[in-house]
Amino acid sequence: MIAIVGRPNVGKSTLFNRLVGRRQALVRDVPGVTRDRLYGQVSFERWQATLIDTGGFDPSSAEPLIEGVRRQVLTAVEEADLVLFVVDAREGPTALDEEIARHLRRANRPVVVAANKVDGPAQAAALGELWRLGFGEPVPVSAEHGRGAAELLETLRARAGAGAAPPARAEAPVHVAVVGRPNVGKSSLVNAMIGAERVLVHEAPGTTRDAVDTTLVYDGRTYVLVDTAGIRRKGRVQEVLEKLAVVMALRSLERCQVALVVLDAAEGITAQDAHIAGYAHEAGRASVVVVNKWDLVPHGMVRRAEVVEQIRDRLPFLDYAPVCFTAAVRGEGIRELFATVDQVAAEARRRLPAAAVTETLRAAIARRPISIRGAPLTLVSASQVSAGPPTFALAVNRPDGIHFSYARYLAKSLRFAFGLPGSPIRLSFRKGTTPRARARGVRR
Image 1 (cartoon, helix red, strand yellow):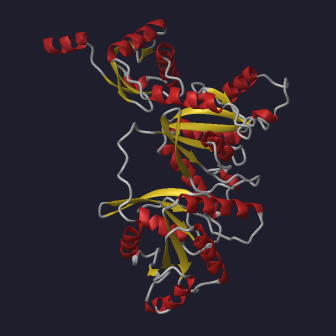
Image 2 (cartoon, rainbow, N blue to C red; image 1 turned 90 degrees about the vertical axis):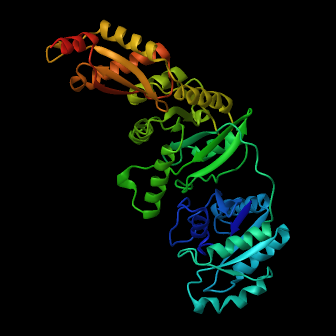
């Protein structure tokens, strides 16, 4: 475990992305972009390590948000076996760098100094000043251009040692993305599920920017929780940084198995909630609607059944998603939420036998027959072709004339027969020929 620390805007996240080999952390040329701890894997000639990207460390500020970032940095240093201390070689050691160095010496962790932004001989000549930080020879690197990255990895490998043996291969974790509007309590919910302050929580909207992955084990099962930035209406997203954060949030849906669509119980269901739920539906992810801040609703003012009815009315396309009620600050409803996530994740992976699927759909067509261009719709065969979401291929005699409302009826027939709670059902129609039609073709 290697924690990357340093003052704001020295290029920590750029270096993190360079070493892990992909753009995982948001990068902008302004201080304070990173706030939470981000974890990524780095590999170098059979050596592997976990990197922890952290926010800019300012030990002196008493501002609540900066203090929260500082707690995240200190937690990362405590977790780490080695600290990568990033400084700006062009500016040399500043007073804040020296104050951070004093904190790192008290932490009693081995430290490697990375002198970032060394793009040429002019910056390399100034490296001698960095010796006074007290951590030995600095390693010159240019995170933006990749210069010195291999030499830095060699130094980290030498200082970290071989490390422990890799753990035995376990069951694949369930990836869960937490999405919603700003300030509905996504980070508080993630912290409640983890049982610790894993991500920064602040009353100001937009506190979370990166998509923050956290691995945890709950009742013997492994999960990866992805806390995401709040998604506002497109018309209200002005800053480039917020646009990038929204893109990262939407990308998290692509790599998750279950999406937790978080609503604010005190504010009710908004149009933007419906947009975000639509993103999860279109991504084909198993979904759970989480009504958070339920403790803020006065007792007896509204019943849970009434809230569920409102959700079904406002989000009709997500009628297959279970609804859970939580109070993240109090830790209420978390056990039920995990049980629901397990259920929808398992249902999303289910495989149904082709014979049962064909029989169910033929019965549905017999109950409500339709004709397409004068010919009755006939189902030749049906089978499940993929899971997550459950997708079925239907061979019919008239695949091009099926109205979307009839396709929705067939999907609901499958759900009524087999359940599949939490997952959207996809149907794909293709041309199929009945045995009688094939026989007529042979006689001709």
